[in-house]
Amino acid sequence: MNTFPENSKYSFPEVEIKKKKTKTKKFRQCKDCPLQPSTTKTVSKVGMVATLGASAASGVLKFKAAKPLHIWASVAFLGFTALHWAVSARPARPAK
Image (cartoon, rainbow, N blue to C red; front, side, top):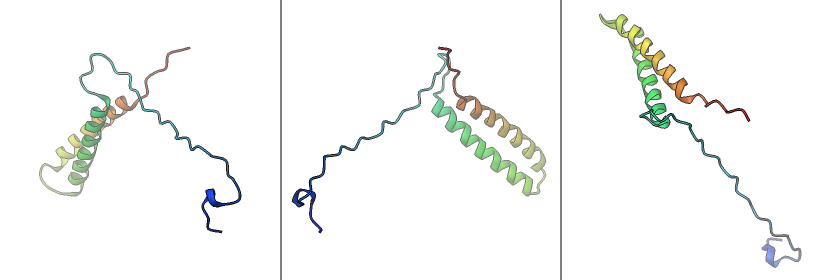
């Protein structure tokens, strides 16, 4: 029973396994933008994590500058979120 297909009495048709083509995302970028979308996404994600951590730490810990730090970290988090949303937004498709 444990024979290779070429040694068996039954013949099997040769089947080719086709690999799926993966599409790469192409970003439409304005000519005046200095940063690449992937760089801006990375910066915005790191900024969101850092400001969210600072906001959480200043909300839990009690020291003199905790309240202003919490407010400014929350505002910065909203700014990084808006940046991430703007970079991640799909470009509008032209009408056909």
